[in-house]
Image 1 (cartoon, rainbow, N blue to C red):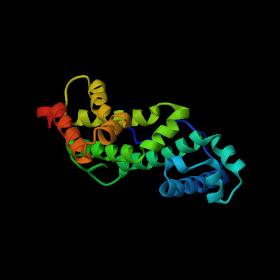
Image 2 (cartoon, rainbow, N blue to C red):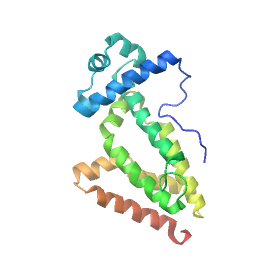
Image 3 (cartoon, one colour):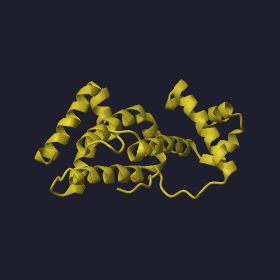
Image 4 (tube, rainbow, N blue to C red):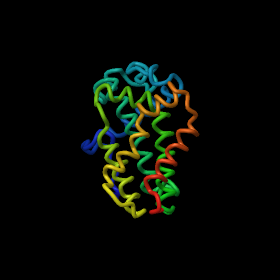
Length: 199
């Protein structure tokens, strides 16, 4: 598997140091506001006030609210990818492949449920975050290969990732009222059925 993280929106050009500082200032303000007010309570004006800059600075940096939400989501996604690539086991390297795969699913469930509103807000402008999906699919295929699973690994990886999609998790957790522990147990069961005797 590649060690290069795949940002949510793909190939942005390298930033100047002052631009990077401004970006972190604004994203820090947005994170604090999300924690206090929730995603729906965050506006471009409120981010500007929290960061101590003019509203035009926020618009110049992110274009619109969806762009700001996508940048904030990218921040969380990049941190999660770093944990998968080089963090402590079992999510990161050093654990058995099956343990890593189970930890991956549980971690992704938690991440997607935590950031469901943010994912929805970012998607209104940018659609499906393909680069983030590409990273997860590559990782799952890599672990299935390490486990010696036979068959069409890209299709099997897609089947394993489908229950981790936000729309599915939201349906199960918030509409059907499933406990997260039940969703996690269902993921574990699915993984063990796909892996079978290979483990």
